[in-house]
Image 1 (spheres, one colour):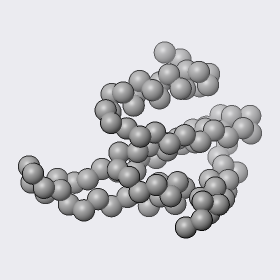
Image 2 (tube, helix red, strand yellow):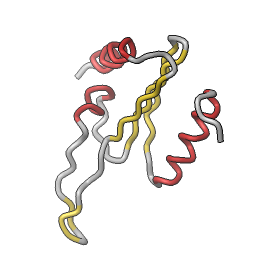
Image 3 (cartoon, helix red, strand yellow):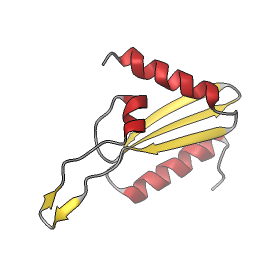
Amino acid sequence: MDKNFYIKSRERLAKLLPNGSAMILFAGKDIRESEDQSYEFCINRNFYYLTGVNEQNDIFVMIKDEDKIKNIICVVIIFSLLISLLQLFFHQMGIFHL
């Protein structure tokens, strides 16, 4: 699909979010069938609708503050690293205090 489709989708969502809010979507991860085999990965449809990205373990963050929108897509390798990055980001935005 054209990248403008995903941009417009995010713009429509941003209009619905109240100021001072954040939304976090996880793309999902593969499900293990056995120790050495996984089922076919199926992306979170809401994540795909807003980003057009079809990769597991990614995270999409949308923040709306004073009618300003920030969109971030994180490629996550280590979950604990993600938590630290989100805390730092929200701290810098003045939304979350460490």
